Length: 105
Image (cartoon, rainbow, N blue to C red; front, side, top):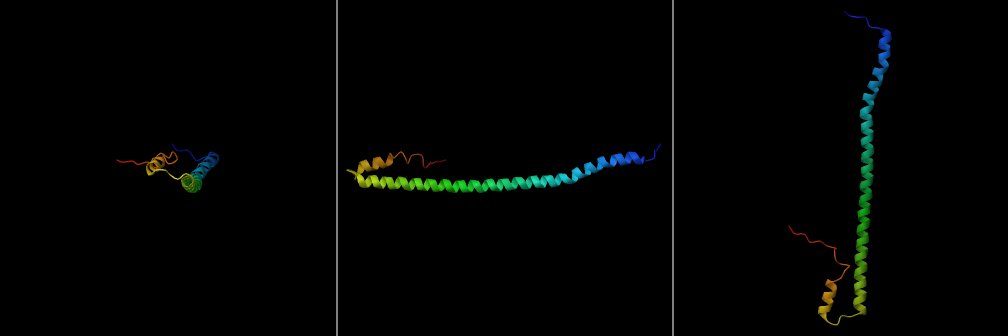
């Protein structure tokens, strides 16, 4: 048997239904805002990393230039007595070790 719709009961349930509909409507908007915040943060971090890499490269180039100048100054102050000892000294330079890695597969 069918009952008649109770207006008071319908009125009480309408607020709950309205809240559910609002949440369903806001959910995609919140996801979109969260995604936009994540993308902004990732973009900021990637820009910082690029700047950091460029700065590191400048420091490495400056260090290499300083080592080269130091070697030239030492060579001018102490001229080599024989050519073999100079090659040995250049090959055993501790500053140059570990700069390049030669990997073969």
